[in-house]
Image 1: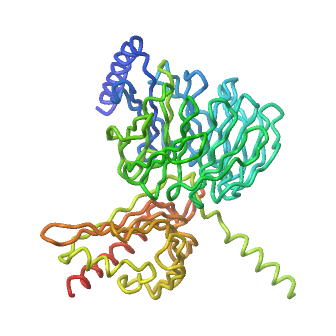
Image 2 (image 1 turned 45 degrees about the vertical axis):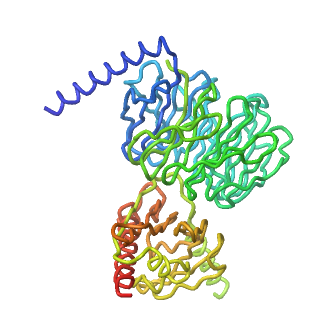
Image 3 (image 1 turned 135 degrees about the vertical axis):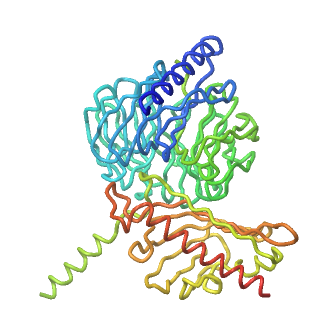
Length: 322
Length: 178
């Protein structure tokens, strides 16, 4: 009975996927992938209609998610299992598991077969083969590393050391730490400008954002935001910055040139991660406690609607469909 | 001998200094609320001073504050059952009657939570009464991948739930008695 039921579920999922693939062929709208850490799943949303296309079972505790540069593959960390799930954007029904040592958390795909992954318990930035899961390198960084971003223009990886109050800057080719830059208190989330010239660092405990020059590593400035900023994203044209404040339940929109806040939007309870569509038209915010997504106008930051997503949603990423 | 003892003491300190700011484990949720037959202003007056937790939570032996009701203000909460932890205010809104705070210094042996962020809010309820909500996003005491039963997710949820429920129950009794 159990087998038959799951067989039907699989068929249903496949049917959903075929439908979505057809729609995508016409619309080619980007897909939004959201991890649900409590449910052990990844939810796939069509950003043209903001409707759910599929729910993929990926095993316990999926936390952060990243897309390969073209969006073909999605990578999901399971810090409590020592695992990375690989989702093929063209074959959503068949996630693959890579078992890795330690406690993988934040990650970024270099697009050359390598993943840069923080290991938050072992204070490492690890470099993992995205096909086989083989450990290519383990680089010592600061304490409790969280998110990882890449600036391919300068061949640099940036890691937020949450308990080190610093950013480790790693050479993507030589795989060594080039610099450790002090920022605010408890840096967690990172974003790189599309031109690769700036790195934005959200400091959870000092409630501010540090703006670093990606090459000189000088601090452009520090901007005060709301309480406990847990998410940061840049608009695709680089002109606007979105900061999600978990304790305040708000999103700040900042002008990237002046670093002045242009808007503060109230969202759901305990918001955390945020992602912006490639055309800049919409931004999506996970409201962790209220179990929904706030959809914001990507230009103004105004809230357009909320989508039910379920309790435990944690990480999200936007990727081109297929 | 003395040197050895000093060394052992410091080694023990190092072992105790586990990372407080977890992010790998799955965060857990506690949401408690209570309906009180008293005006929101009355209820808010009872809870508004961050360091007066002792006045309305029977599990608390003392709550001594520094910095008042401003962001950055702290309270040291000593439990009747032993142990103490420190909370730090992030956001305080007298007009809308809520405050948000976080666990700044845990005491995982006395209260098995390594970190939480929490909000207490008083809202108008039906018939001139109040609705008080107290919620938290929290991480278990042992943030490693093999926690014991006393330091796992459930232990953390149970501890915070009991703490919130005891406080809200006492608050209701006090506010309705006035």
